[in-house]
Length: 59
Image (cartoon, rainbow, N blue to C red):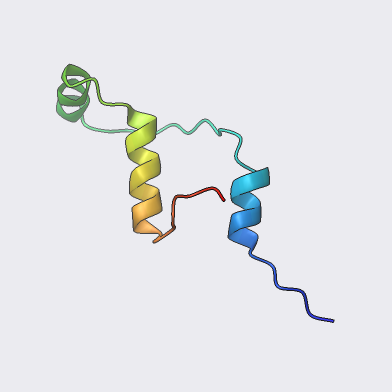
């Protein structure tokens, strides 16, 4: 018997703990973002979701 399974939805629901990542950006970009109170984690998550064409809803 075949069972339909959406691994991405499963992972979103059960594997959503935060993972710390280290990255490097130019100093001028960091300064500009800090002045505008940019949330780096949020921006990175949104960019990855958009880049990977993933729907960002947890059903």
